[in-house]
Image 1 (spheres, rainbow, N blue to C red):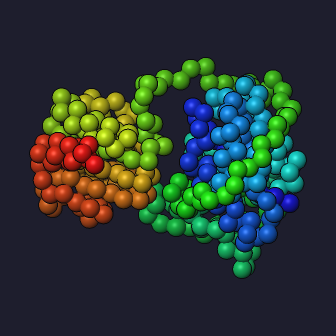
Image 2: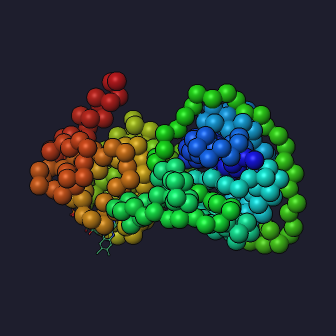
Length: 321
Ligand code: FAD
């Protein structure tokens, strides 16, 4: 027996969220005695990079290197992971909660006749059945879901588990999958991406600006701080509605939901719709000239001050570090 983990990678690197899923699976196997953790990776990725998945807790990585599996072809990924699941005799599949993960997991739930729980934040409670705690309503509440099927799929929420990195390298084995033309019936033909930009949904640090930045001509200050921190840039909804920033940067209930280790909000009031997109952040820093701004209630650290004075000083101080 073993637990299978579906690994996502981008630009030659295994995603941190997938490594968190591996660490989660390792702890799960210690609790449920489901044997070793085996990861499955699809498409082109360096075997040294895959071996490092062992540090997070995987004993072995199955690698289906067929280049047609690049670019996240959902049906083909679901077919390949289902084959890996059966070949290793797993009863549990763990993966990271993500857009690709959601699409693949839903198809796998059908293929494997498995109960699927998404946004998992803790190891299941197995005292009375198999009860999984998950985050709902953009992190404002929790739900407990009882899984009654033999096969189970758990999609782990970003930042919900501690990533372990003290294991040994995993062995990497070629994995051959049987895929038909229908598995590639739809595919992504092009993706747009500004070079060098850190993707907002996956960023570990985000610097966001709101209407308090007064205009797009002042965004250089947000970008400079983001550059020093290695962060992605985001914004509030009105900022993208007015056209100061592109829509894909809009954070919140109706925009991108982020869960970075650090979220820096500059000149954003902290309306409930904005908070809905950021309240899974590990640490929130708010810079606002109004001490009564609601965002301060959700902040771990707050700076009451004019962004036009604070940002240049903060950026210079961080550069000097
Ligand atoms: P403002 O509310 O105008 O706040 C600007 C802030 O900047 C103020 O707190 C002010 O004190 C501060 N400030 C001004 N000058 C300075 C300065 N020099 N230095 C420092 N601080 C300064 N909003 C989202 O962001 N995301 C969403 O997904 C979203 N979805 C919505 C969905 C619905 C259905 C609705 C009705 C609204 C939604 N909104 C969303 C809008 C939301 O309600 C707020 O209107 C919006 O978030 C406010 O944006 P803001 O904080 O940038 O602007």
